[in-house]
Amino acid sequence: MSNLVRLIIGFALLGAAVALFIFGHWGWGIPAVLFSIFIFITYFYNENMLIAQWYLRKDNMPKAEVFLGKITNYEKQLNKMQYGYFHLLVGLIESRKAPLKSEKYFKNALSLGLHMDHNVAMAKLSLAGIAMAKRNKREAQMYLAEAKKADKNKLLADQIKQMKDQLGMLDKQQQVRYSHR
Image (cartoon, rainbow, N blue to C red):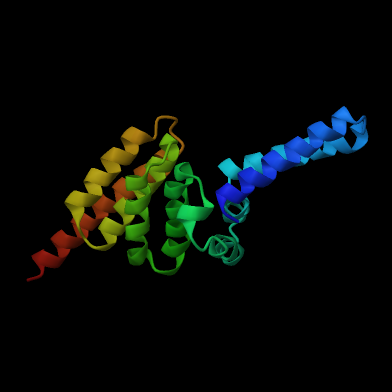
């Protein structure tokens, strides 16, 4: 459902609730107000994205992918603040199936804007992992430094440290490979 339709339904339901209050039907007016508040909340936070995030936390990728698949045209169905988060969620799901193909989603998420620092750090950490998979050490170090700077609450400190250790091992593997020639 598009956001414009959500707003129209929300305001119509709120108007009906006010009319119910005026005519003295408080028992029907209170649920109507609560339901209109719920509709206004779904304007800012799409229900499919909320459910997909919940399934991602439960590590149930197929169900999360189903709910993200219900968003057919994200520009019409989502608020502009959610565009980046939509691409971040799609990138996280895609990274489980084909990590190198998820790079475009993470870059789109960063370009469209993520408002929370730990989400920016997660996207940059994922991009660092993709750069490591491509054996691009300079780009991986750049993304790791940006992820460390964005992770102000140290939520991803362990993952960043592991990634730096793996980057160091990547150097050792290249040295061993070149020493045998």
